[in-house]
Image (cartoon, rainbow, N blue to C red):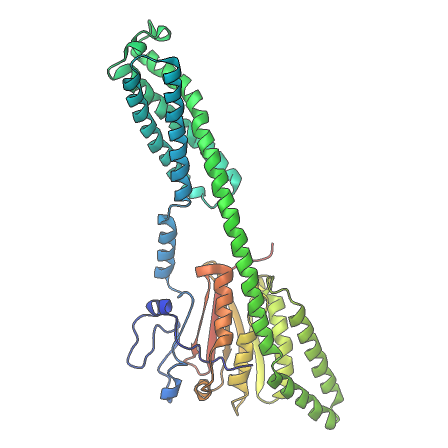
Length: 431
């Protein structure tokens, strides 16, 4: 129930998203919104600046997508594991050569080291080829890794054959009885076939280790994100509940109840009291980390608006425009509560004319868009110098914490009069 019309100064990173300010201090406006409404005073300039966690523009979406594509997931794990595996390989063959006292020891070591470097390159290529499934299921990663290890092992076997049997063959290679009497092609295919079977398990062992470590890292990150999400949601609801149980709201409601009882309008008083009880029961018992259907979220807001309609019977009307297909869309519980309260406090309570609070929703490009609009006097928001925008900023913070850059909120005066808050998030529906 505190002042929320003004979202306050944008965060430093949001200023770049909103573009350069014009002569009035405005930044990028909402689509189809006007920031030059006649009669707006200098005190209203803060109200007419738009702030959002992420702008609804195709360019921003493309930049986010390109940024995610350019990233190399778990690069540190890949590099460390590749280096460890091939250093272990070099160490083992060196130890074996020393124990068995191979001839041409240093020449063999040089070639084995070169082969190991080729193995490093091939293993890194396997890692790069696995990027498309970096955030997919464990089964998808395992299947792709098993497939990619086969050509990698064959290429490594072919290189081994070349460096030991084709390029300046050593005496040990020349005297290899298993290769006597074979043509060059027969020797190549035999070496590749036999070597591929052996080296396949080396590449597969690395892939299994990498997938396991990558999966463990993602699980830890998911756990941390869940913990942060739960904490942020809990804190957000506690702040929201502070607004909901604001003494000013309770005072107005109880005062209205008293007036209804004194005027013998007991039926209306009873209905208002039941709505108040149901509203507090629903908001106080809601799980702050849960998602609810859009239908249920709107029903919660209707309880609050029904209470306010009794307080403002001649001034407040409510419209809901939500397609049936979106009623099952999932939204964070009580995400609309501060927005609706804001509309009543500024759009209705400070207006002398009838005001309509309209809740509308639509789906576009895989996103759920929700708009809460009142057609009251938007300029009255500037009269409250103590306005901090905590409620609306709280909504934006919850959306950003829950969905990241795929969500956000925008707010500002509507060109047709009044004030609009626009929320967007991924459209997730019940099956």
